Amino acid sequence: MNLFQTMDLLLQDWNHVFARQRTFDRARRLTYGQLLSVPRHTTSAAICTIGRQFLDWSADYRVFSRSPWNPQILFDAVIDHAIPLLPPFPAPVIAAIDDTACKKSGRRIPGVATVRDPQSPPYHVNLIRGLRFVQASLTIAPLHGKGPARALPVRFQPAPPVPKPKKNAPAPQLEEFKKRKKAFSLAQIGLSTIVDLRQALDAREDTRLRQLLITGDGSYTNQVLLKGLPPHTTLIGRIRQDADLHLPLDPNTKTSGRPRKYGPQAPTPREVLSSDEVRSLQVPCFAVGQVRTFNVKVFGPVLWHKAGHDKPLLLVVIKPVGYRLRKGSKLLYREPAFLICTDPNLDLKTIVQAYVYRWEIEVNHHDEKSVIGVAQAQTRTPKAVDRQPQLQVAAYSLLQLASILAHGFERTDDYLPLPKWRSHSPRPSTADLVDLLRQQIIGHTFSADHEITFGHFVEGQEPDMKWQKPLLSPAGLPHCPEISRLERVTDAIRLN
Image (tube, rainbow, N blue to C red):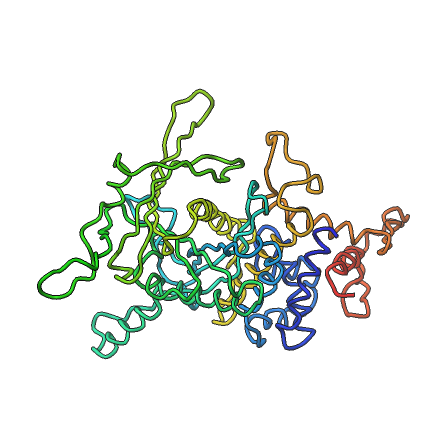
């Protein structure tokens, strides 16, 4: 099967999500419309893309604002079809978690707040207005481990900041704000996302006993996540280079006063990097198109106050990797990575490879906002503001999964040829997938099953300069050959 047929087969798993068949049909049409619309990925552009611009739009908008359906169930199809692509048991399930902000300019959109711009320089923090989401993605890599990986989004949870009351607000309102701010913080929403993903894996027999590896940046390596991780879940996250670490307490040590929980001071991650006593190990991992060797130092087990005295950690320091901007130029180095792992017995290569694969979730953020157009729809109702971006991300995840099932991980000759200035691409980009999907839909429309004639282009007509009223079709619309051809294109997306 090609990409379009595989994508359409995966979309059939959404049938049970919606209460009625006609609601599923509308959601299915809008899914294709949002993927293929250009340049803005709004609901109105999706309606025009599928050829329904001359019909009533209200029912399409009510799919997001009024229809009863849970957007998180849309990702169950991704998990079900991604599990067979995972390495065999007892290999862990690797996932990544991160948050992103989608820019919005409206001041009356529910959930829009002023957040930090992630693209601002470190020496000057910029602020933007937008919607904030927490995303979790499953990492799917080739079984031989020597190829590019894909991150399939499986959760896209809204995480709006709690609105702050005015300065002269009463004391009870300020106390309520402090409680809500703590309960709905970014760390708490990230923890609930991890717990929800762990429960989804436990509900499936193939992943019930597997370990879940969650990789995250420094914003998710905190006390909330380290102390609240569900069972069979390991966190691999970045840590400060001057973190206050301790060695485990010797049980034979006798001290006066209160019983101690932490041992003597351990070297900081920066000291471990520069220490000659800690041996450097060579770890081969796949990164940037080929297998590369990373110099890694391991120290542990250590204890950290944010994780607690009963949770030993493994400190992993990855030395900076050298690179050149061009052939023969000066060798430059990136910043080192200081990581902690909540499972000290985990294989070192698995830790490093899982963290290197974490970059795929950053690729997801870029493609979702620039190619798919997540949260570009002009919605105002609270349900539509939350549901419409989640349906777009779920469709993007199904598109990535359909490309793997249909054509594999690498870029094959099935895709459109690259431009002349690009000689090689290890895998297809999201733009390649959208172009191929659009080409196959149009090719299916003009195939032998859908006979379309172009005889009206050469029909001889006498020139008539007088204005005439347009002939009305049975539907009450002016008879126009362009509309009939557009309806034929729409038939490729409709259910037979």
